[in-house]
Length: 275
Length: 250
Image (cartoon, rainbow over all chains, first blue to last red; front, side, top):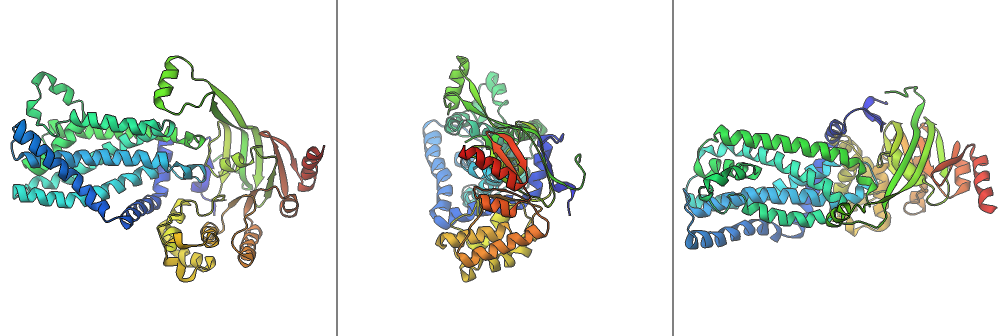
């Protein structure tokens, strides 16, 4: 039977963003299959793969704890190691998923020239792969957390909300990067430099309290500032997020996701023209 | 939907495809920004297809002929939705099975069975559909117990058989073939030909590219001759081929 959903019209008046959304829904099985493939093949090859995702933030934590609580002496409310660890967990999620998102489109693009697939399925599945990998590293990190803090505040229940906001923001950034990366492969390298700078401009290894008051507004333009803060509220501080921090986070997530999606779906038609 | 007379399967209206070929290849953003600042970004347009109009009815078997680079593959890509036209309109009604890249997206580390599901998802099938198809596909591909081994252990013949089995398991409305496939050994070739033929008889619309003129003449109800991105002639296979070969000989 020929139904409406098997009709393809290149001159369709439906906006590409809506069209892409529909197609992605139709291809939802592909998102699952791609995520499954990436995780299976990664861990089939190396058990060390999992260990490494945990060791990296842990090593960072140890080094930073030594440098900043013994030498520079940052004053944080709780223990410095859990402070820096919680910041790194959030940051790693963002940097890993956005990088994975871009890589999957820039290097996995060969398939797009041979067969029709809604492009965003690749971006979304690499986000999920990122989430799963990150989850693997989260379990032991939270265990260490417990060892140091000896408790987890009840506000941890807001964690899914923080994760959802962070996910939306990262996907939006990932889509924007992919749209650029397809045209210019050097964006992939440049992004690593930007990431490093961006991390130091976010209160991850230093507390917000050392930022001079007249500069604080600059920090508040940085979306990552809010996600890090929300995560710390939930995991270390044990308080519910005040709306002054929650609302900007929600706004950034929504705006960046929508803008990323729209630009990506307009540009994705041209991807197959690229060698 | 507009061209809704129920006989049309594919319609191209004044379709052009222009690849933008940069004068000098600009590979990086850095270079691009520098060039752009110096106002030196120039492109040359390469028209792969120029103002093509073509209507294909349901059940037709259309052969595309022409030199390499005449735009045949570009046309197939338009119909299979890989490319969007630079201008004009492409309208396709029905499920398209592009038999261009059998087993595209197979992953060597995954088993045959896992790859069936992955490849099925790439072709746009849902989980439920694949559950119904999986056993039939395994049967048709004749892989036996190899089906649960990673496909890096497969011979190239087995690989191709599996790809063919997934892509052709159910009758598509529109079949797209680039060159005629010869998959596997002779026995399997006969089997795959029989399957193709049964789809022809069940009324699938076929669009195929081949350099084998005998085959086009034998199989097709119509032939289209593409030359440098324009339709040089279209009509009965015999006449179109004669025109095409005549030019080649002259």
